[in-house]
Every structure is written in structure tokens, then in C-alpha cells.
Amino acid sequence: MFITGHIVGDFFDLRRAVTLFEQVASPAAVVAGHVQHERQLSAIYLSGTAPDGGRLSAARDETDRAMVLFHQRATSLEGRSATGPEVVQSLTELERRLDRLNVIREDVDARATSRLQAIVEYTEIQDSLYQMYDQLVTVPELTLYRKAAGLQTVVRSRELLSQEDALLSGAILQGSLNAEEQRAFAEMVAGRRLLLGRGLQALDAELRRPYDELLSSADYKRFTTMENQVISRGGRPEQSAAWQPLADQLGSRVDQLGVSRANLLNARTDAAASGIIAQIVIAGGLGLIAILLAVILSARLGRGLAQELADLRSSALDLADVRLPRVVAKLRDSEAVDVESEAPPIPVTGTTLEVQDLAQAFSTVRRTAVEAAVGQADLRKGVSLVFRNLARRNQSLLHRQLTQLDSMQRKTSAPDALADLFRLDHLTTRMRRQAEGLIILSGAPAGRAWRRPVPMHDVVRGAVAEVEDYTRVTVPPMTDASLVGTAVADVIHMLAELVENATVFSPPSTRVMIRGELVGRGFAVEIEDRGLGMTDEDRAEVNRRLANPPEFDLADSDRLGLFVVSQLADRHDVKVTLRRSPYGGTTAVVLLPHTLIISTGEDAPLLPEPGLNSLPLAPAVEPAPEPGRPL
Image 1 (cartoon, rainbow, N blue to C red):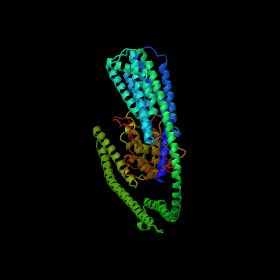
Image 2 (cartoon, rainbow, N blue to C red):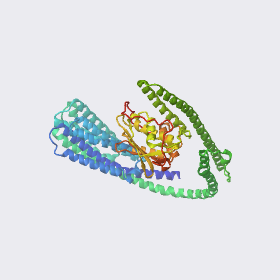
Image 3 (cartoon, rainbow, N blue to C red):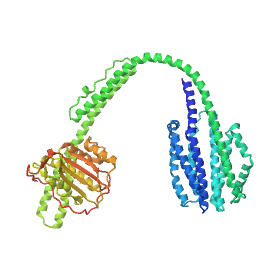
Image 4 (tube, rainbow, N blue to C red):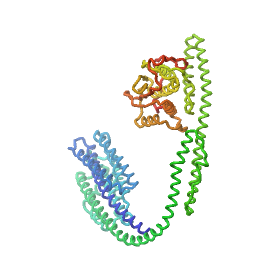
């Protein structure tokens, strides 16, 4: 079977090489030829001042069509089936280089680049093409691989011939080569001759024969003489008028030879693949006999093993789908969990030693998972208690501090002192909200409570009073309606989080507008900012969390406001939704249900408890932070 698999692998590798040649290499060669022609015409265009009669524009159109065909062939189903990770990476790099073609063309049209620089930029595209060619030579047969690599080297020498032609054609039109262009030309000539000689050495006599005839021709000798004249004298060759026709003729002949030699090598690959098929038939017959014997023995052994594994699978599914979810549900409801009863050992009915060991391992995993879930629940409960105790202590101190500040405000009449006390009172109010946030994280109520309904206008203004940049918030008159006292503290906290988010993540020169009115399903409060807004993906994710509050994660501490709002909304069946504002920012819509709202005439709403400070709304005097992540 190993021998058969090895032979089959060679066969498919050969077929893959043929597919790569037809779907990728061949259309890429067309692109390379058009890029070479466009490069030559661009160099000529940069070397003169007269219009070229549309030749360059036509060449660009041909290049674009070749690029479209190459992309279609390379990304086709057949092309993708033969390309491995290395080829895909090379194709990606080539596409990136081709994307720069428009920039190069713009520089050429504006004559904002030199002749040599334009040639270099076009050559970078060609280099990406040839680097991709190197990845396409994947023939497993060593002799064919060497021939393919040698032919690829000859093709690279043709690219250097095109570079010479582009540079010297432009220089002939302009009259001379500068020192930098002369050095570049000499390097091109040396590289072309080196690659041509090295590539021909790897070809056999049949593949090499047409190239030898070309090298011994009079045209090629005349061409090399012109190259030597340019290198030695630093100027145009003596027969400069004959350079471009001669270079085009030799380049065309080299291209034709490359195509014919590639087709010949491809035919040899097909022949090698056909020979491998015969080997596959012989090796496959022997392998089939061995497979039949192995199947008979495996069937007898597998029947018993399958039953044992089925029993083990049922136990594992019971752990994943029944026991662990039941434990998690009990822990979420603060019920006690007995590890022994929830994680009994898995019964083993099989006799296979490996299955018994696997069952024992599953039993250990089950017990460990249940113990870990109980431990995590205890840890979360402990953290919640720590949050609650610390927050309660801070809350008590802050209440005392607010009372003291209120007493100090009543005792003084100095304007400066009153202003300082007012700012300190506002800062303490905000600190109280942060302490309440910790209590909410622990799952307990905030602590503040109102016995009687409170007008919604006062509720909103109380929330604004707990925001640092309250002077930028505008609260117009609202519909007469009141909020039941049991929900006042939580709604104030929830609105304060949303208002602070709107002020923090919008420019300091903008206003935050809060509107409220009775609607068909309750009382709606809209908080609208004019900041940079959020992406559709981020807004959808935040709305999902607001609709389905997740469990508090200590690692996700950068969005505590989002968690607090979602918990408070879920506690009172309040719907909070973020949407795009017409001004480019974000609008938070808070829909309070009818069960929390008392409309005009039901009760006379009063504000008997302190804490809802009615603060004057004035233009901002301090800059707000730059927009960033919400909540």
C-alpha cells in the first residue's frame, strides 16, 4: 500500500504540474509579455516630448485584459485545486504588485518619474511574476524538474533582455545614457548572459537545440556587439536605429522558443504521468488483496470495539449535555451541589484495556469539571461579597459626606465657598454612583430607595446631576409622568451611565440632548450625542449584550458601564437599545414599561427624599475626552 500510495502521489503531482502550467503559468506569461511591452513604451514616452499616437494607451489596455484573464484562470475551480499555500502566497504578492500599476501609470503620464525609476517599478512587478513561476515548478520527477528549472532560468534572461530594450530605446530617443543608467544597463547585460548560460546548461540536447541556433545567428552576434558598445563607450550604439527592431526580433524569437519548449516539457510530463498509471494498476492489484484481508480481520475486531465505544460515547454525551449544564444551572440559582452525586464514575461494560483506561479518564475529567464549576461559583460568590462589603462601606461614608456638605452649604453665604462646596458635592455624588455600581456588580440592590413616585423630569435631571460634564446636557420639558419609587434609584443610575457615556465619547463642543415622552408601550427616554458614533458591528454586539445580560467577567473590566446598564435593565424589564443618530453619533433609547410609570392623575408625584439635585444646565467649560469605546 505504501508503494501504491507513493506512485499515486507522483501521478497526481505530475497532473498538478500540468494544471498549474495551463491555468496559472500560461496566462501569467501573457501578462509578463504585455508588462514588458508597456514598460518599453513608458520609457520611450518619458524620453521624448511628442505624443506617441496612442501606442502606450493601447498597450495598457492589452495589459489590463491580460490581467483580467490571468485572475479568472488562477482563481477558477481548476486553478485553485492545484495551488498550494506557497503558490497562493505568491499569487497574493503578485496581485498586490499589480495593484500598483495604476500609480506607476499616473507618474508616467505626469512625467513625475525618471526613465530608470519607471523601469525599476515595472521590473518589481515582473520579479513578482517570476517568483511565482519558481513556486509553480513542482514536478516530482527529478529529471523533468531540472529541465523545468533550466527553462525558467532562460525565461528570466528574456526579462533582462526586455529591460535592456526599454532602457536603451528611451536613451536612443533622448540622445544619451546618464551614468546611473549606464551602470544599470551593464548589470542587465551581465545578468542576462549569466542566466541564459546557466539555464541552457540544464536543458538536454532536444530542448537546447533551437537556443544554440539562435545564439550562433548573425542577428544575435550583432545584438551583443551593440551591447558591448554601450557598456564600453557609455552612449548609443553605432547602429542605434537598428537596435529596437533587432531587440524586438530577438525577444519575439526567444518568446516563441520558450512557448514551444514549455509545451514540449509539458508533453513529457503527460507521458510520465501515463507511465505511472501502469505502475498504479500493478501495485493496486497487490494492494487490493492486502486490503481485503485487513478488512476481514478489522471487521471482526471492530464490531466489539464499536459497542464499547458507543457506551463510552453515551456516557460522555451525558456529561456534556446533561450533568454539567444541570450543575451550572444549580450554581447559577445559588443551590448546593454534591460533587459525589453529580459526578459518579462512568460504568465500563467493555473488556478492552484501552476503553477501560479511557472510561477512567472520562470519570476523572467529569469529577474535575464539576469540582471546577463549584469552585468557580464559590469564587464568584466571594468576589461579589467583597464588592458588596467594600461598596457598602464607601456608600455609607459618601452618604455622611453628602449630608455634611449639605449642612456646610446651608451655613455659608460666600459665593466662592458655595461654588467650591457645590463642586465637591457634585464630585461626591458621582463617587456615590461608582460605589453603587460595585453593589450592582455583586447582584444586590443599590441601597437608595424612594417610597413615593418621582416625576420623570426630576429622575432624568437627577441622572444628569451624577455626570461630570453635566453642563453640556440639555433636558427639555417632558410629558407629565412619574416613576414608581422602587425603581427610581436603579433608573437614575442606568440613565447616568448612558448620559456619561454620551458626554465622554462626543466632542466637548457638542451638546447631549435628552428627550422623554409617553409612548404606546411605556415611557421612552432618548439620549442623543453628536460624537463619532459606533460601527454597525460594535453597535449590534452592544445591543445583544443589553438584551441578554451576560455573567460578569472580571477580565472584561473595560465595559463595566455596559454590564451595569444591562443588569439594571433586566432587573426592571427595561429595554435599552442603541441606534445611529442622524447627526452621526449614537442615540440610546430607554423604554420603561407601563408597570413602572404612573401617568398624570393617578398619584400626586413628590420628591420626598434627597439626591435628585436640580442642576442648571450651562455650556461646557471643560473639554471632554476624545471619543473612544462606548460604555
